[in-house]
Length: 91
Image 1 (cartoon, one colour):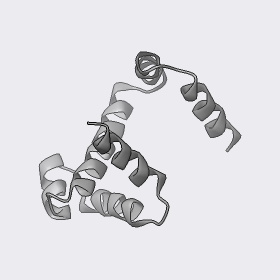
Image 2 (tube, helix red, strand yellow):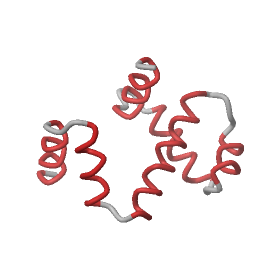
Image 3 (tube, one colour):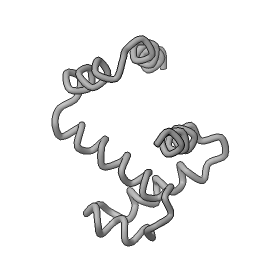
Image 4 (cartoon, one colour):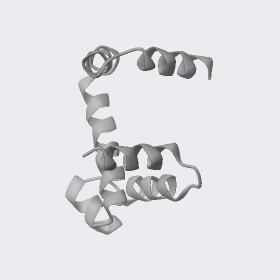
């Protein structure tokens, strides 16, 4: 876990552009695409405009991936849910 904490600490010291470039250096294009799709799943779930099956079809992902996202958002004190709420409120 120490490595994750080190990465979090490093990200905390960066601005948006540096974080974007850091991710581009650290992750492959396929990994970035996967991460981006997971984020879209979570945002769509949080928006409550689509059912899990609709999200699965729209993003061409398994229903299991969408269900996993739903479980994350239903978890008490989910940091992911808090971050999504912050990003929605910042608009």
